[in-house]
Length: 463
Image 1 (cartoon, rainbow, N blue to C red):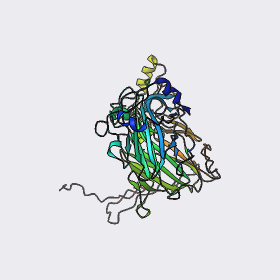
Image 2 (cartoon, rainbow, N blue to C red):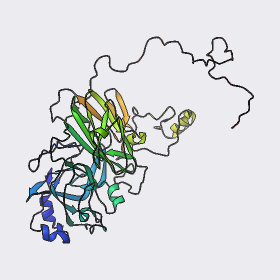
Image 3 (cartoon, rainbow, N blue to C red):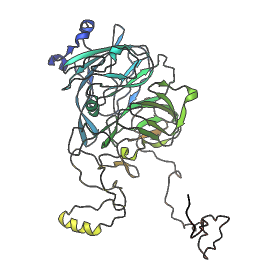
C-alpha cells in the first residue's frame, strides 16, 4: 500500500463539499491509502475502536481507518484504475483507491462512521451505502438526496452503523456507466458482540461483469446481458484466488451481486446453510440447507458450512456461460458437421486454420494464438489436466493442519489411494434388457429385448 497524501496535497485538488465545510474544515483529511496488487490481502486486524473478527476480501483488501473524536474515519478516492482481470489481460476501469472493486469497509454496530469521498473521475459521482439505515441526506443519490460530487471535489458522509450485516457501496450518479466501469465495494458491519455468530474464516466478494472486446481495454458500458467477462471481484478464473480453509473450520462466504442477472452459486462436496441476506441475519430456526444459492441482482447472501471434507472443491456460478471467458455468442453449433473437405481447401489459403467444434466445444488442451489483451474462453490447469473453466469459478481448498490465519495456496489436493475415479479396463457386462410391461401381448423376436409399450396400430388419436 502507498499513501496518497502527498499526491493529494500537491495536486491542490481537494476541496470540501460546500454543505460540509463548516463541520469538517477543522479536521484534516485522513490518509487515502491505495492498493494496486490484485492478490488477496491478509485480514485487517483492528488496531483501535471496537474489537471484531475481520473478513478476507477475495482478490482484494480492507480499507484502513483512523479514530478521531469518537468517529471512525475513512477516505475513498473515486478514480480511473487499471485492473488485471487475470494474468495476461488488463482493463481500464473506474474504482476506488487504486482498484476495482474498491476496498472493503469494515465497521462495528454502533460505530459513528465518517467517510470522505474525493472525486478524481472526469464526471460527477456520488456513493450510495446499499442496505444502510441512515439519514436521508446521507443516502448518496445524486439529485435526490444530495448534489453530485463534481470532479475535484470532496464530500463527507456521516452516519451511525445501526445494524450488523453484509452490505455494499456503489454510485447513484450516471449509475449505468459507472457500475459498468467497475465502481463498487463491499461493506461489513460487524456485531457489537464479537461472540455473536463467530466463524473461523469469513470471505467476501462481489459478483460483477464486463464486456471488453478482444484487443481493447475499456468495457462497453451499454451492454445489458451479453458480457464476455464474468468475474468475482473483477477477476476471472484462473485469476481468482482459492478460498483456503482448515479442516474443521466454520466458514462463512458473503457475496453481493452487482451484475445485470442472477447467479446461482454452487459449492461442491459441502452442504451449507444460508445464514444472511442484505436485510440481516436469518434466525437459526429459519435457515435452509443448500448446495446452490441463487443471488438476484442487487442482493447479498451469506452462507456458512463446516469444512469437514478435505479436498479441492469447485465453487462457481451454475450458469455455464458465466464459467467461460471471452466468447462469441453467435457461433453456430458444428457438432456432427463433417467439414473436413472444406477445411482442406481453407488450409491451402490459411495454413494455420483449425477444424473446431465438430466433436464438441472442448478446447482446453488446444493451443492457438488469441488477440492481444483477452483471455481464452476456457482455461485453467489442474493436476489432472485442463479444467476448462473461466469466469466465475474458483476452488475451496480444505486442508488439515493449517495455521489459524494461514491463507496461502497449499497446492493441489493429494487424494487418498482408492478414492479417485478410474478407467475400467475389465470385461464389459452383458447389455441389460429393458423391463417388460406385464400386459404386453406382442411377441418379441427371439434374442431381442421385450417391447416396453403395447402400441395399437391404426387407432385414431383423439383429444
